[in-house]
Image (cartoon, rainbow, N blue to C red; front, side):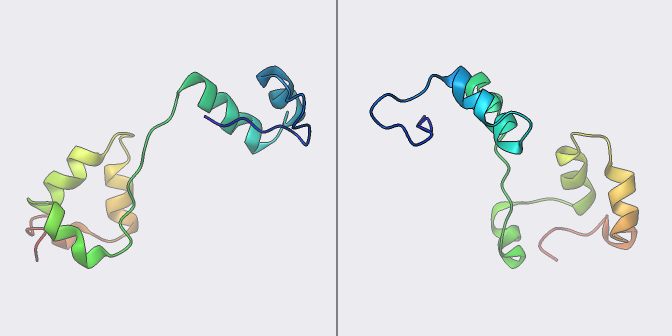
Length: 91
């Protein structure tokens, strides 16, 4: 992974200096996660009409499988999805 040099390309800072420089910002959190290798990749499809090409099953089964935070019921209600839960994703 590339490390920011904070403008000093002849004598780049150590990671501790980089973290100190960005202390209190989102970048500090980001770089800390980079160093800890504590990332989770999230795929966000841009073209929802293409989802049926890569996903199969009923809407409810897919939602259950992807519900890592236990917020399924909350979001189903927010997005008013109750009527489509038994539909095949291709529909």
